[in-house]
Amino acid sequence: MVINLSKAHSLVSNWIAEIRDIEIQKDRMRFRRNLERIGEVAAYEISKILPAVAKEVQTPLGTAVCNVISQPPVLATILRAGLPLHQGLLNYFDKADNAFVSAYRKHDKDGSFQISLEYLSCPEIDDRILIISDPMLATGASLVKTIHYLKEVGAPAAIYVVTAIACTIGIEYVRREVPDAAIWCGDIDEELTAKGYIVPGLGDAGDLAFGTKIQM
Image (cartoon, rainbow, N blue to C red; front, side):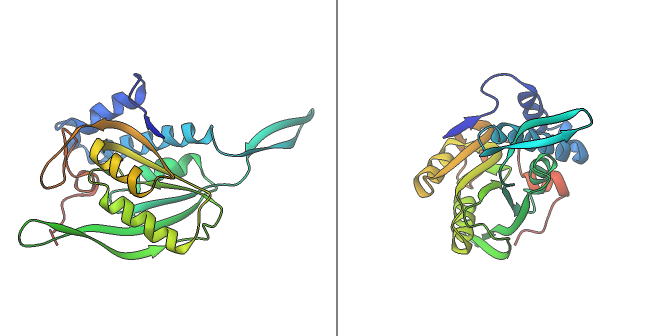
């Protein structure tokens, strides 16, 4: 399942326009907040399909029967770029457990790169709903490697991926390598450069959110 949250016009498509805009991108706080908002909407949409149970709630005037999520999900993200999107999900899934993975492109002299994973902090994920956030799904290499890494820790009941901008090439790679994962996208682009950047995309989400880094 692949869901494009911008397929029909909503506030999400407005926020996508802002995070793409080269002038608005100069405001880092606004860029981070818009990613956070996209995460919040994705959390709301995902919540509609999570397992729920009926719960009796005592009010000042009586008892109400309410449907509530049966178990909070585990929210995972890829450092550092995924943090604002992750925060948006956490704002809504406020009782969630959290996992953090460091994954980055380690560049070679010829311009190619490999995905390096160096850190994992993770709760118990067996039989849990696992929601993984990464703002840019380009080649899909880092996301797939992260999912496989997490699957070495435990066996989640379901895997949902949340991304702000995805490329069709990356989506197909994830669907091929992790067929049990559902993908929720803020928007979908068709083109990927030889260096693995989405076009038109928005640039480097981590740099736009937190500042430029030394290339390793």
